[in-house]
Image 1 (cartoon, helix red, strand yellow):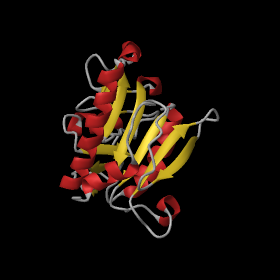
Image 2 (tube, helix red, strand yellow):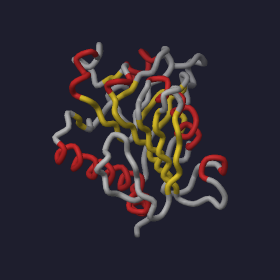
Image 3 (tube, rainbow, N blue to C red):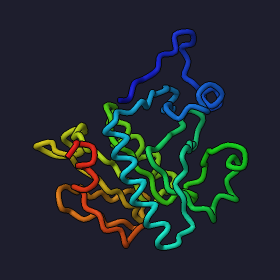
Length: 210
């Protein structure tokens, strides 16, 4: 579940610095255009995220890649009004020396530090399918997964009839994501983890109790 947090005592939006001071140590909140969203997740949501985390960590270990999945990470796009907390982010250790904030805070500001982001869709699905697509593409993050296990997204994003869908976004040379909708036995073709042997159904059914 994703809920916008009200700010009754101040009408103006939160800046990133204000957000960091008040909510920086709590990974259940993120900031989008000055508005704070509560990322309190359901149990199935967490099951899906944990399943993906486990599968990708196996790939990292097996291929001895210089990547890791942090327990907590905040991505700060350009500007002063947004700070995103992906459900899962794969970072490149070799790039972190260039990150100005990383030595003291788990904050990423440079897209080349990120290999992959995953968002497990919740009630505020518009952010995952629209705003975050733009932000991650502008940062140059090469791969973005949108995991809609409960088929919450709009028809323009998951089609008709609505059904659980995994959307794989691969960044093209033009700076825009090329999107592929996966369902059922469709195999996930990852540009970051080419040896990954995983189908959409294996990921999406994790949150259905099947």
